[in-house]
Length: 335
Image (tube, rainbow, N blue to C red; front, top):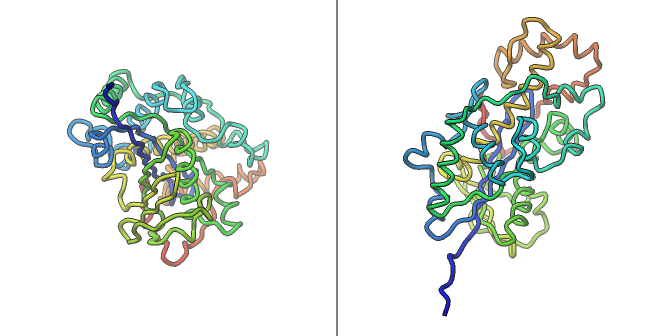
């Protein structure tokens, strides 16, 4: 008799970046890991040891103007085949390798005269140096040796226009965040070709999610748990999806998704900044969050935007209160 090979299961970790800013996109990212029995517990807990110096809650590792570590994780994952392509030769190629949508779909809401505001890659360059990339390769090699192999990474990019259009259609950012996570759950289940167990960062403080589902709406499912800390659901043939409070600080796969998503958001926000810095002398770099520099950025670019006919809905998010029971703290430095 031949001995059976290792039994593999699939874990998904998902998180959002940019839920609460004034400017720039919201990014929802998920990673898919193939794990054996030993790797199951490793993938489902916070990074340990030396790995914890390079992987964890993205707010602690990636910041406006300092994206090298998030970039390194994204580049190495794509180079190792986890993206839709293996092209990591430029930030633009990297974004499109990670994006769940192709270039034409991403640009479809953009009026022609607005496209360069968000999609021009002029002046972009990588920041991560070779030693850091080697460290990340080594981290992933060690994880694989311990039974955790990252096989896919995908990001849903919700630009300002998509967020505003969603709000006009009755879907605030919390709902759009949830629906993007559901989409990634389904997409990565297809990549796995088997049931997956997904852990997502809590969305909007919801305790009960069934009534708010979008892509998962109408599918037969069982409620496993519903609480402020964790809400979990079982879908036949798809697997389990759980929404966990502070998942990026307690789950390796969620942390990795958060790191990549933070990088994607920073690259896309920097494009908006550079676009207007070419027009307004001395314009400071803005994070896009609710801070004085961003407020000054909005005011300083107003005449340029009006002169070029840039719609407000392509530049600044409309404000709206989340529905009762769906409130989540919004940090000035944001996830």
